[in-house]
Structures are given as C-alpha cells and as structure tokens.
Length: 116
Length: 375
Image (tube, rainbow over all chains, first blue to last red; front, top):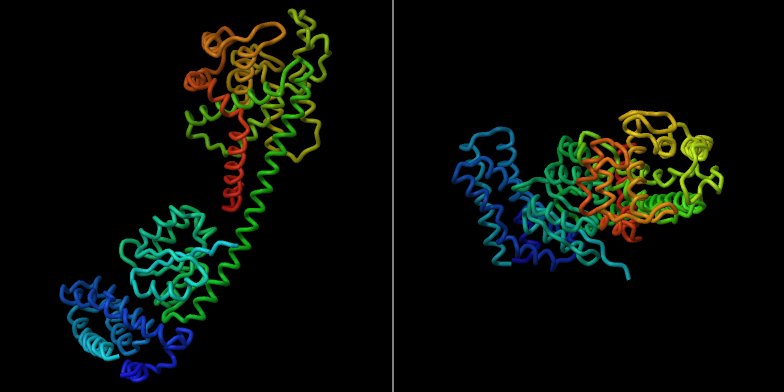
C-alpha cells in the first residue's frame, strides 16, 4: 500500500497532509511510524473499560489531536464524537457505543500502517 | 554569533511535542515538558533563557491555564510570550486564553508554515519589547547612580570644611540604611517601597549641608564651643532645611521631603529637648530619628578634633546606656538587633560592589512596579 492509498482509506487527500509538512513525504512517513507508540487510544480504551468519564474525555481529546495532526481524518471524526458526547454530559453507556467505531478504525489504521 | 532562541514545548502527547520540535529545531533550541508542573519547573530554572512557550491546554497534573496562572503570579508572562496550542476552538476558551495573557493561538492540525511564522513573528515582537525594557532599566540604574554620586560629592564638599571625609557621609548613609531595614523588619505593617528606602538613605547624606553657613572658626574650633558659638552652630539644621526648601521642585517630591526633614530635625531629641523646634517622640519624622542615631554612632567611632575614636563596642555601650541622650526605644531595639554585625556590615556595604548590587536590584524593582501599574 502506498501513502496515497493509505490516506484515501483514512479519509483525506494525501496532498493535504503532505502540504502541512512542507511537502516532506519522508517526514509524514516518519511520524506515521510513531503513531503505534502513541498512548492516547490506550487511555481512551482503559477509560471505557473502567467506565471513567474523565479518562474517556482525556483519551478522546488526545486521540483527536494526534489523529488530526497525522491526517487520520476518519479516526479524528470518531474520536471527536466520543469527546463531544462526554462533554455535553453524556452517559458512559452511550460513550461505549460511540467508542466502537473508534476501535474499529484504530485497528484498521494500525494494520494498514504495517503494510506501508 | 547569536545564540539560538529557546522555545519550551508543553504537551502531554509525545507525538505532538515531537511534531513541533521537528518544525522548529532547525532555527531554535528546544525544551520539552509533558505537563504543567514540569513546564513551571523548567521556567523557574531557566526564566531568563526561555524566549517562547508553546502551550497545550489539556494536560494532567496542571493544565495550560494553570501554567498561565503561575506565569502571571511570577511575572514571567511579561517577558515570555505564550502561544497556546488548542484543539478547543470555542470562542470562550480563546477569550479565556487571551485574558490569561496568551499572545497567540495555533490550532491543530499543525501546519508547518503557520507554526513557523507565528513563532517567528511573536519572537520578533517580544525581542523589541525586551530590548526596550533593558534600555529603560539601564536608564534607571544610570540615574540612580548619578543621583547618589551628586549627593555624595556635594555633601562631602560641605563636610570637608570641618575636617570630615567622604567616608563619614557614606557611613552615615549606610548606618541609616541598616537601621531602617531593621525597623521595617520589626514593623511588617509598614509597607515602604524599596524606592522610598533608597530615597531616605540618599537624603541622609545631606543632613549637615547647613554647616556651609557656619563660620570656619566655629566649625573647626578644637575646644569647647561657647554658648554663643553653640547657638550659631545649632542654626545649621534649620539653614540646611531652608536651603533644600528654596530649590525649585515639584510639589511633594519625596526626596525633598525626606531631605528637608532630615536636615531640619536630625538634632531633635526623643525627650523633646532638641533643636530647632523641640519636637518630641514620634513628632520627629522617622527618617530624621534614624539619621540622628546614625550620626551619633558614627561620631563616636570616628576621630574628631575634640576626641579620639571609640571602639564599636564602647560606642554601642554608651548609646544603649543612655550616655548620649535618650532615643526612641524601638530604635534602641534595632541597634541591639544589629550590633553584633554592625561593624562588619558597615565595612561590607561600603565596598563599591555592594553599592552597585543594591542599585541594580532596586532599579529592577522600580521597573517591575511601574510596569505593573504601580506608582
């Protein structure tokens, strides 16, 4: 899989992302490589398991930011949904439901990254 | 070759910090902090070195607003610009950021060009500001030094006639300062600015300028003065005050107020038996009381036409024992507190280095006060 396809799957145009990095494709690759070590998803997942609203908020916020910086548009969108829900006083049960698409997308992104 | 400017990146997400570092490390030196507490610790340690902070909002332990609060309290916010990094683009949080002293905002996703330009522009703006503040500070320092120098030279010239040296002026000033500091320490309810303390000690140097009108024969008489001669000698306090008063000045200039009080009333006595006005107790302004005591002490430990020099211990003994008249018991207390190190203290403060340090730190305080909207 090449970068163009990767980003199409991720929900964004490659050109958009590489533009933000000043045109440096190598840089984009390098930072994508760091994504699997980012702890934001883990915080969110743990928050869901523990039913801890504060953790859920923090995790989804961080994940949203990282996803946004890396151009992972779909992941960003799903994380944002969880965040918005929690911030408007939503309950944990619904948060768990909203988490599902986040998890699915996250797993997909990770596996695609391995094939890059 | 100019050193690189230093940017502190604060974000709990490693990847975000790394991204910003990547964008900036070519041109700048980078420091990192993973939460508010770390950021504050770094700023505490490297206050003078950090040129800009890129600050995330949501962080564990202490968030972005917590950091801004500390920066405001410690006055770092004046010199260190903060660019807030926020995914939270609600106008509320942006307004809150600006109210807290944030200079600019950068949103996510980070755009290489935007980040670099914002950082560059902000640094340029602050560099000018920093330069100006340094200029103002240098001016204040230079002015303080000039002031003190002029006063000292003038007073020395006048005291010279009666065989005093410039060191007498310096010592009276220093002793006044030491006693004043002790007095203020005992009275925390009195909030006297460093600036005013300095004015008092500067004014102390002028206490005897009235002596210029006293005839040579009287001023330098080795023996006891006759009653008539003494009456003439006594006029030096009022004359000195009148001279100070005759100089055109702005109304209420504090230096003049203190100089006038000191010149006129440094021979008043706590019990009311002094001159020229027979003031009693705390009718005598504090500044005059301090100089009176400083003058007496210095006279005792110095050689004069009419006496040899006493030792520091003897002088203290005489004053505390009431042999030189009755003073404000609170000032006696100050003397007791300071007496052990007084001799050493005076010697140390007389040195040029000590004077310089004092002027520099005072000027910094004055600058800080003015910038914060104080007097």
